[in-house]
Length: 235
Ligand code: URA
Image (cartoon, rainbow, N blue to C red; front, top):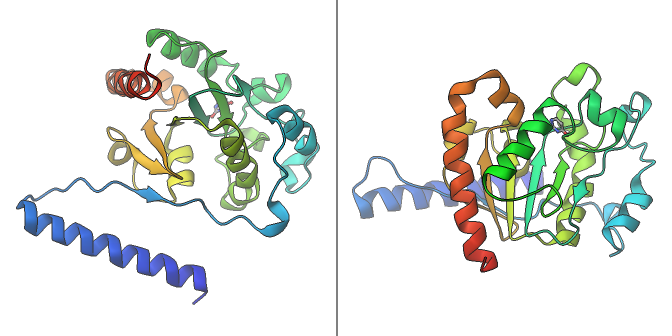
C-alpha cells in the first residue's frame, strides 16, 4: 500500500468515526456529512510560477501531456472574469468549444447563459472552465488518466482566480474534484469544502437539455447558489 493510499484509508476511517458519532449524538438515521477536500497533491514539476491568468494560458496552451493534443483543434483554457467570485467547472470541450477555443459555446452553453441570467449573472462576471482543456474524441467521458494529467492546470487556475464559490456542472466535474464516486443526486443540495472554497454541485446543462424534469432541481440549486454568493460578496 502506498503512503497516499494509507492516508486515504485513515481519512475514510476518520470520516466513518465521525458519521457514527453524529448518528449516536443526534439519533438520526440519516446524517449530513459534508465532503471535505484538501488540495490534491501536485507533483513538484507541476507547480507553476505565480503569473497572471493570461500568462498562465500562454504558458500551457501548447500542452502535449496527453494524447488529446493530437485530436484537438484548440486548447480550451477558460473564459470570464479573472477575478471572479464564482467559478463554474464543466466537464470537457465539445465540438463547438474545440472549434472556437472557448468553453460552453454550443447548445449546453446557451442554456448555461440562461441559467446565469436567471440569477442575474453574466458570463463576463463569472469564470467558466472545464476539467479537461481538450476535447475527448466523439465527446466520450474524460478518462481518469486524462483528468489526472489536466487537473494541475485547473488547480492553478483556481489559485489564481481565488473564487469564493465553485459550482461543479455535472457528475464528472463534481466527482473528479471531490474525489468521490457518489452520485450527483447525493452531492447536490449542500455546500462542500474544496480547498477551503464553498463548492456546490448541480446538473450539467447538457443533462438538463436531455431531461427536462431535472430543471426544477437545477433552479433550486441556482437560487441556493445566488443566496450564498450574495452572502459572501455582500451583494
Ligand atoms: N460541456 C462541458 O462540460 N464543457 C463545455 O465547455 C461544453 C460542453
